[in-house]
Image (tube, rainbow, N blue to C red; front, top):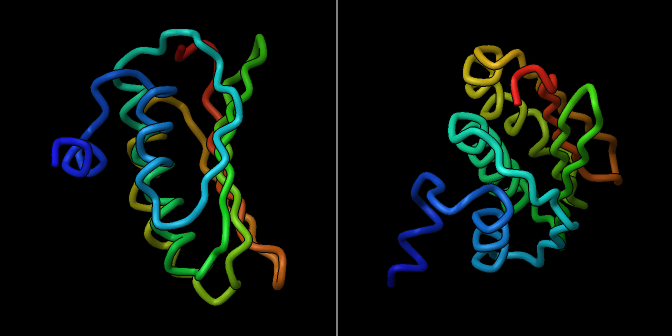
Length: 133
């Protein structure tokens, strides 16, 4: 029961572990690419966690068969990307739901981008400047 509750709460372990736990309880297969082991500030983990959670919830509503979560870090920015193969009709709703997180991200100079093409699923991408890390 603790694991089930844990997937609906804010992260407490760290981004890599929290995303892996969320993926293991998702209603669709989620591939989690290797995430950098770097320790991020709690406020950043929280913002990224909720974006990933919202993107995976949207994937389920879009009837996706699978999703993928990855993160890349460069000297200039940190980027988290969630992609799925869901149908396009849920993309507009997903963009609206994710836009509620824009304020949180703008507070740390982050940018949110949602791309969706018919028959190709949706990609949600968050970029945060390294100065915020």
